[in-house]
Image (tube, rainbow over the protein chains, first blue to last red):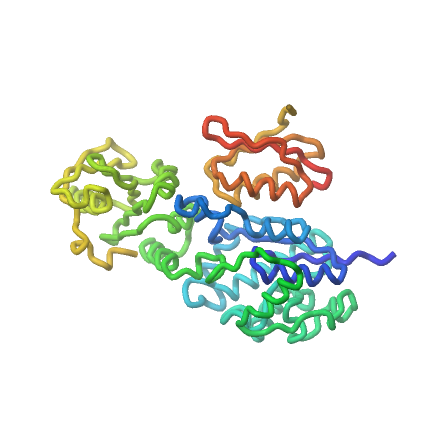
Amino acid sequence: MSKQIKAVALISGGLDSMLAVRAMQDQGIHIEGINFFTGFCVEGHTHAIRKQDQNKQKRNNALWVAEQLGIKLHIIDVIEEYKDVLINPKHGYGANMNPCLDCKTFMVRKAMEWIKENEFDFIITGEVVGQRPMSQRKDTMQIVVKESGAGGLLVRPLCAQNLAPTLPEQEGWIDREKMLGFNGRSRKPQIALAEEYGFTDFAQPAGGCCFLTDESYSKKLVDLWQVQGHKEYEFDDIMLLKVGRHIRPSPLYKLIVGREEGENRFMEGYRNRFDYFFNSSHPGPLVLMDGQLNTPEDIELAARVVARFGQGRDAEQVTVTYTPLQGDPQSITVKPFTADEMPKEWYI
Amino acid sequence: MSTPQQTLDVRGHLCPIPVIRTQNHAKKLAAGDILEVLCTDPGVTSDIPAWCRINGHSVISIETRDGVIVVTIMIGNES
């Protein structure tokens, strides 16, 4: 009896990895999936936090894809290890703070460790040559092969015919002729293949599934690093960059203003870590203060910002409660800033 | 109703962390063991059952007690 060949697939929850797995299943390969949680994944958290997203279908797309394909999925927490990828990317960042090439290399390297521990034979991804400007070019895909240590054990079924034969093809574990030859940015071949496989429901996140490709998120991350004077971060730091308006009236502090009920509720969990404000004379958001308010003038200015985002924004006076992390709450009555009085550069 | 042998507290964590912690905890358990997971993210009501289905575990119940979502699962044979 011949040995069952086993491969692990990097599952993002999108269509491409779904198709790649299915193509390999058609060749009789036993597949299990890996999904890496870096802390920057978009969907699960934002849907959980924001009330306006709560009507959206709640599902983890990686788990959903695995279920559709009938494969096991191993979700792996790489939050700590990922810090080095983001802080020191050998190949730099993309259009925003996305270290895509280093990220892909890291994930394939982790997958290599996984297949050694679990006695699997090779790795597959849903990558397509020319699909993405940084990590999915013919030259950079070769860099991933080399720097991850995967060598011939990394198979990209959707574009394999455009790449050099891999070990599983050379060994005859899989048939190169049955692999695909997709290339470029067009999604039409994937959509056609999805139809052929009968996949009618699949996630196609615009701009990917990572906050680091998001311009607004990246600006907040850069601001965090600039103010700290270093690039280290904790998980809570990067979580809080996902919520609220971030307003920095001074290099010494910023205010995180909840934008809706879901965010306010989420931010309440951080009241034991930050000074915070709320409008006490009018309804308004919870506002966390990250940094230092050194003078009564700082507190008053922050309170005017807080009042600006409450329902008393047009009132002559609004009472704001300021609760420092250490010390008693204090009430401050202020005139809210008008929209014109809030300098654009305060908004991160 | 089966009595949980173990309780895992993931209150305050957002998905996928509750799923990851459940997955990692399940590796220490034997087939037939009952695990109760205490959560606050409503996303667990779809994610933990999906994780159970693909990994051969069973969801015994999902209930809310004093604002805490309690997902009780039975470990399957393949953990």
